[in-house]
Image (cartoon, rainbow, N blue to C red; front, side, top):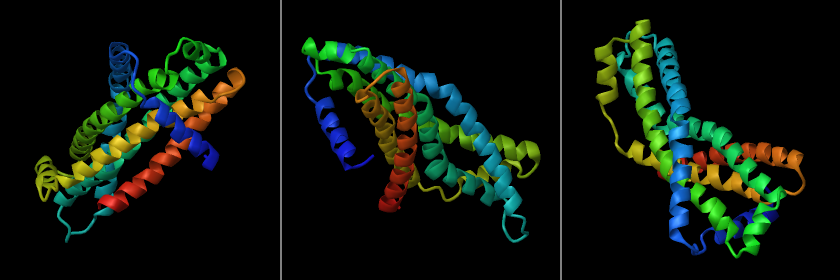
Length: 244
């Protein structure tokens, strides 16, 4: 995304936040998008988080093979890595692929089939009508999914560690409850908010300015996922640098 595209992206965001014509139409669209982003993605996030937590516990146990290191460390390392990094970032990258491509394809198809032009002729603010409900759904539901991911990742670590015999249930529970810093959850939720903004606005931008036909819509969808993933990783670094 060069500076020209970034300028167009900022101008699109400015149009998105213009005062809506009718709030009740927007509310219906917001709840539909929250259902799509949140409820529709919960199963996928649950499976991925549980398995990542289990694998992380096994890998930590494999690396900490010393008599001088208590096994309770396995739980605390898995807890902090899940909360600070794995849950926000992996959830965001998975959602960028699932939701980002859908948003880009939907808006891109509306652009090439001239539905967006029809909205503008009718006097409707098309960026606000099409993108704002998705944006609100993203910044509210992505943090909720990240919180679910944290619990499932730590729970998956418990199951993986205890079933494999790498750590006993009491040691793992002691590890996840010892020296817990609540500030790590604040950092994770700030990341989730930023990632939710990226996951919805970058694909919407790519779809909104598509020119051509079905092939260009597919290319825009792919480009949206790639740019979203790179933006997520860059913002992950920036937020971590600023808050930790």
